[in-house]
Image (cartoon, rainbow over all chains, first blue to last red):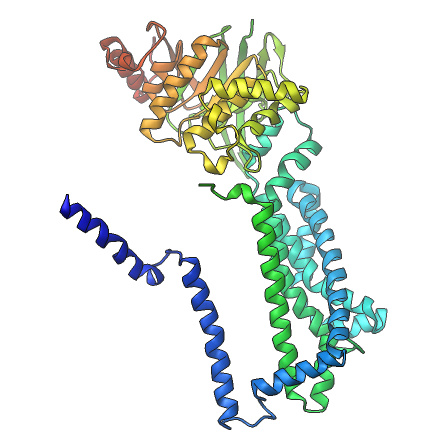
Length: 279
Length: 254
């Protein structure tokens, strides 16, 4: 009795020690958070030390306090909020249009031979074209307004999204479709009742990943020809060597990306709770 | 009355320039309420035969009829249990059964009653609200069987339904299936590579060679069948005979 108790007591301790450095072992939630936050703290401390000890000139890398003060000032006079609002509007519209189009077209191409043959090679072809090179063209076509920003974001995300949506539709097990057939369901009903819900988690994941790229294309579009938005502010600040604004806005973009990503992950947990095991 | 008839059934797979004949003139009739197993080495075409009977696969020549009416693609007169797990993951066990009943055009209240009744039949009443992700492999296949039985098909087609299960669970499933079948008779075509399973469950065993039927064995073991039966001399003898004819090169005579 005593010896088995001793074993039981020893076993969990040994497992715990190795957990973070064993392939495939998942860290516990608190451990994960501690390490994740630790990395941020460490980087921030490094930044603080390098700037406050005078190791780098403020023109190259301003101190965290300077960046914070600058952001606070921009927030106080409203500049930050206007920039943010304009950018959020652009990414929301462009991303919504792109996602909607890619879901419709990607699902069709994933299901039906005709759409696959007509869309897949074309998408693969366009996908490798440099979006950046389209910037002058889009300006020529649609000016420097919001439509041009939509166009750039759409070009950068749509062609990637379509392929990912198609892939998640292809991963729907063939026997699921076979099941629908044996139940006498029409192709249209199979599409709506079986294929779509089955592919939905994969599609959602594709959207979450492509949202990251959408942010990049947004800033690119605003850097080149714009009179408003986060990217525009970065270009303007560059002209006046306002490194603190640039760094502040870059950090802000990182935070925005992190927030949207986490929001979509959280939604995933609610939408697909059937994938979770209840105790 | 519900019979399944296949006459002169032939099927060739074409991949590029290669033609591979997987079925050559299969003649097979399943009598009313008969439980027929089809055994054979992998690649002999037994699963293809079942897919054709289900209407999921085309054939080149011959005829397939349910109650002497030629089949036109898949339909609800035949229920199918697949080898892979086909419970829809976003629906609970009960909703999965109801899914089939709704497709059959039953009303909501009726769906629920029939679903509960069939989940009880496979001893899963207390898992009705669980999602497939929370069920073991054996439980998933039990729900799949309940689903296939729920809309009262004339013929039940099962394609190695227990193939992915561990030996213990497989035994339990076989017992459950005989129980269900003995109280709830219908015509069954059961594809398996497990000879013991075939002997335990069937009225008749069809041994397939590559693309053709080698021979058939009638199983005269008494019903209801229980686990102890698998130890009897008669059982083991038949099992040995079937195994031998699967392995033999020449078509044996039964």
